[in-house]
Amino acid sequence: MLRRIPTDQLSIEEAPRPRLERPDDVIIKVEACGICGTDLHIMEGHSYRPDLPFVLGHEPAGTVVEAGRAASEWLGKRVVITLFTGCGHCQECLAGNERLCANVVSDTGVFGVWGGYADCLLVHAAQLLEVPARLTGPQAASLVDAGATAANSVRVAMTREPASVLILGAGPIGLLSAEMLRANGVDVQMTQRSPRRRAAAQRWGYEVFGAIGETRGGFDAVIDATGSPAVFNDGVKALGPRGKYILAGYAIVPNADFAEVSHKEAVIHGIRSGSRHDLATIVGMAAAGTVRLPEIMTWPLAGINDAITALKDRRVEGKAVIIPASYSPGE
Image (cartoon, rainbow, N blue to C red; front, side, top):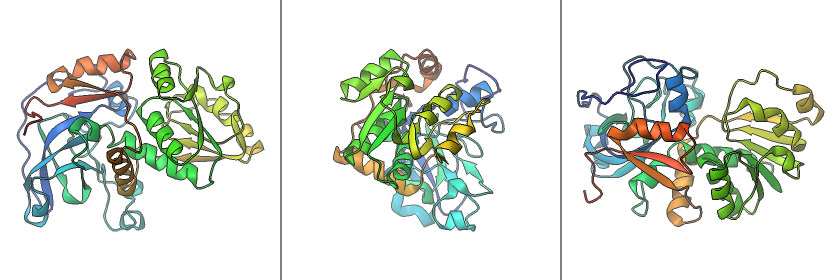
């Protein structure tokens, strides 16, 4: 439970079990829930500010254990979720881009609807995507936001049929983006400051540099998965003419050099998670073994603050995932 902002701790509490409210509601018993950097930013007071108290966790995977009469076909199925609920009537919602709705109702586990750092959560059936049996709960959870964001980023990069792409940051989004690009035959270079994550990407066979200036430059696209303002100017410089700078992670950049953007006629393209199609794409590729998944480290729900500390201390090589005590793999 998030009780205050800013904070460096979540509290472990008993809360009322969610109840079905609409015919299309489902209750998911959580198998696993990934921790995202956005959660840390919310806790620090540098991002969304949900109404408190609030349960974070926007990367859940689990099994549907209750369903309204309009969603009964989901009972017993293992699922992940899309995150956003929009107005349902605008052009973006009707096109499946609820995340771009001007009147977004909720972003599950971020604002509006409580998330997956719990034994169970309530969502709408329209948010559900079935998980292939080949993927474990933690593997599926690792794809909910990081995977959808990577798939969206790569889809945008591929519109120009790039010969080369630079990925800034070798965390989960960066590694999944690299895997998808490699599967499409695109040359990939990466940068990563953290020696732990740099070594992990190198073990996967990628060229990984400690700084942007060490790369060869002239890239058709740069995917910024860092969320760091310090990389923007050098990242734009690494683009070739009419290159795309794709913001998979974002930050306030106080000294952005837009002269460089203009000189190259570069395109800056924002990314907000991904669509249902993006999530289905990465889940399908992971289940087929077309892409490898970042190393997963797990903690029990009661140890979530230890997991958060490990992330802050850069001790997580890949993806941090929470496992509720109520779930056992044999169920």
